[in-house]
Length: 113
Image (tube, rainbow, N blue to C red; front, side):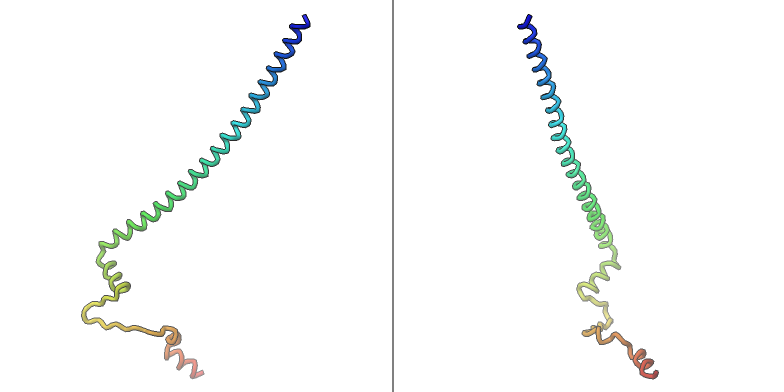
């Protein structure tokens, strides 16, 4: 009888240890999986942000392509970026725009007071 009692006590003890180990293993695996899931969610958030940026850039570039076929846009670009002029036009270049901050009419009015 004492033999079966000792065997039963050992079996219950091992059963308890095994159950505790399983519970501990469950919590460890759950935290590892949760950490991986959080990392994947962050990766997904960054990918969506990048997609949004690329989509915006794509729309801007598509708008530029669409406007490149517009003759007014091409003319404006040729004039501002490359200095082209129409026949008969005269170009005026202001070399020091800071000196023109006050117009002569404004100077006369201030001087008269």
